[in-house]
Image (tube, rainbow, N blue to C red; front, top):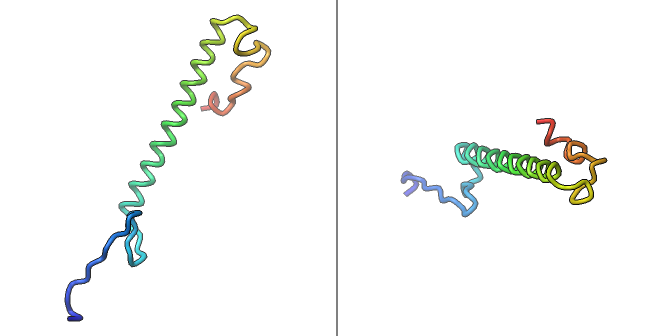
Length: 80
């Protein structure tokens, strides 16, 4: 029976049992990771904008001191 078809079974993590990594699955995972990272960055940016709004409508003695603007606390968010 050596001439029969060979079946490759997948493991739970999506990799093939024989060690060959499925390129299509890898591309899909990379796209999903990028989507998650973009969502995190967008959420953080929205959070900082909300904090800026709250800072602008609240008195300087609450939440944040006016001597330390959020652009200095979160410089990478404002660089984008």
